[in-house]
Image (cartoon, rainbow, N blue to C red; front, side, top):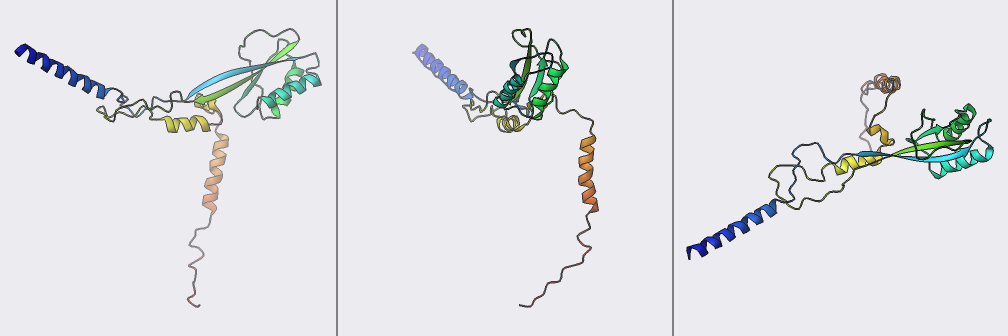
Length: 213
């Protein structure tokens, strides 16, 4: 009889431990305020080969390239580079004018792409970056208990997801904007100067209000 009772107690104890461990499963573990859901920037290279001659690009080739830029919706944040084995200045100038219609400058140095450039051809490389937050939304936490006082698995998805969607140039999330600071100083000085030049609101005296009907 004591053996049977001990077995029942052991079974009940094992069952209670299993339930306790099951209740702890899925609890958040990140105890810091640094979100593990961070924006990830991915780059994709698109290539387009055009025929070139000593005078640059023929009108027909320029039209093909212009149509490709339109189809790719060339926009701010994109980078356009030229892989030209002949390093023709006329070809570069023609492509620069077409990209300039979209407000894009030609980048120095083309990234490595698959395949090779056929003789007499020039490869135009469009590099586009996209930002996203992998793993969002995250509702993996199955328990309301939070013994570690940790943040939820989806913590940071909202703000970082909006940041990744709203940033005009995803590359800014990696390297930021580099400049001399002159434009920033000039812009801020305009706002400060306008604030200082405004006449105080009390200079005109108090407004008189009549009580007549």
